[in-house]
Length: 359
Ligand code: PMP
Image (cartoon, rainbow, N blue to C red; front, side):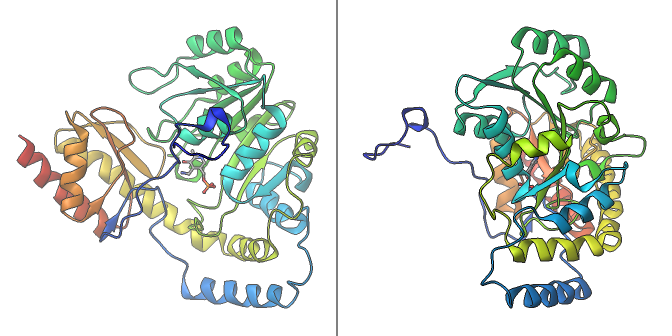
């Protein structure tokens, strides 16, 4: 961006984050859950919001005490409410972490391709960004990662498991090794944890005895609540206290807190969709492979596929057929979110068509 306004020098020339929000029949571009709330959940949400509305003259509970207790109960692992913190999406959680532990003169490190907001929020908080190496198959090599972390000694390290946009889950041994090598905060972004295949454990199991470890989660994906904007973290209570220094007072509205608590009450019903989406994700992996593409094994609700040559041509071909997926800027690769079976059928048919045309 170029402006006559006195914008910070380090923001000049940058463009705002944004996946295209296009109105097309099949939208599989932002890793949303395709299943909206059931009528029963929508009615409960409306009732809770109506109740909260009658007290909107008051500020909300600044510390979101009840919501944090509910989130602790949902996560299990013997977590207590003072180990949980909540904000407007995990993006705000990441921002608060960087405001508290990053900032001018400090560094954050991540292994790209990964969730680009780790880098962008680092830059926005004037935290220098150090890029670590991800292998060609998009896994992390423990030895190389440990060497890089030891050499850079970043104030904040981002590990994403399952990783966006690749779907790659991390072995707990890698997280443990990074934690040992690091002196700063280690953030494991588990936005997609609920979609992982059986036997992929959460970094939540590593929290005891590791006061610099943070696990971030969101209600945007598995809980179908992207529009609500609730993300949260689990960490040592002292780390949570540090975040209170940088959060805005009353950052999480009463309506948001009330609605999130209702959604958590409906967790079993909401998480039912996860089983369907995991099966659909596995179907996408095998059917895209059958179409002759290279497909990255996925533990998330999306699939990265490649071998496309110019991916922008494939992306446009799909869009021309009413299917919007994501070009994440990786040459030869595209990312598709698992939608409903019908949406995935439409995507697979369109992809087959486009690939035939490209031959
Ligand atoms: N982390 C990762 C890895 C993500 O992919 C996303 C959303 N695309 C987020 C965090 C942010 O999610 P939200 O702010 O909706 O919680």
